[in-house]
Amino acid sequence: MENAQNPSPVDTFEAHYLKVVEMVHCYAESVGLSRDSVYNKETKAWLWRKGSAQIEVLIQRLSFENGSRRDFLRIFSPIMDVPSTTNLIGFYRRLLELNDIKLGIKFSMVPNSPKVWASYERDTQGIDFQELTTVISDFEYWADKLDDELKAEFPNLN
Image (cartoon, rainbow, N blue to C red):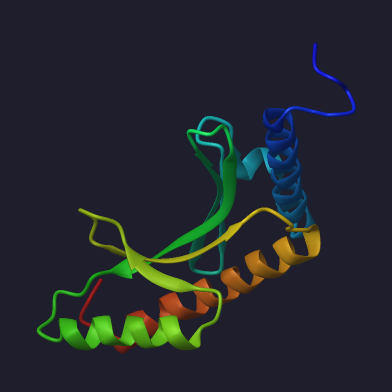
């Protein structure tokens, strides 16, 4: 039987994970969303719209052979399709420049996908509700703004 004063690492990891899950639910409710309408129990992900941006939040678990685990808050938004243009180098350069100047957000691509994604990730260790609120709301702002700006800057796409 486990000692109640010394919980196992698995119990500690799970308790922390559930705490962060509840914080994301509370964030969604704080901006007027219903946790039941934005949370998918099968995928364990939250999905909603902010302006023109689709926002997806998930907590990714990484387990290690030694029994330890790290959980990451990950936020994604599909920004646009990769352009079918002769100026692909200019397009990719612009994404790299934005990676440098837009703090907390980065652009990436998923293998075998035509989409450019904005993303954010952070280890959940030490995160509190105020920080979670800040990173999600900042991400929502930038995803909604940058999807429109990039589509306007590269209009022959989409």
